[in-house]
Length: 117
Image (cartoon, rainbow, N blue to C red; front, side, top):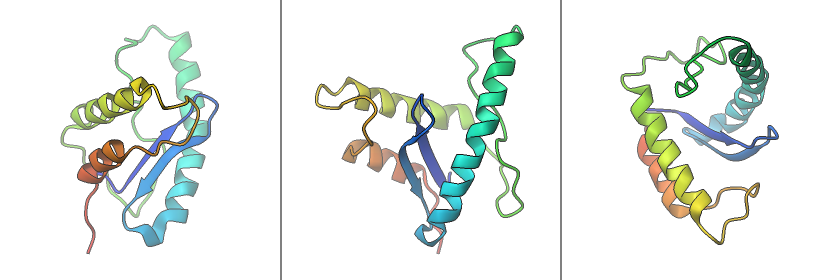
């Protein structure tokens, strides 16, 4: 389960951000943008080391005490997200670099989100 899902463009701007609960949306936007620096560092370090390029899970990107990360199956979650993202990219009416506004993608992300009461 996830409380925030973000898809970031190659140029480091968000294509899609969704969070639950929505009252913390600004906080999650901040976390996503702060994590981008860590992503850049880890990707540049991966280029220097001999690492399996198929393993794209970068681990913890933003330390927080508010949320604890206990992923039961992060690879499965990312695989579902990647497959849905691929479906969006294969849509002939989608322009790469535009914000993602696919109902199917949004529905898949919603199914991954944890519902907070």
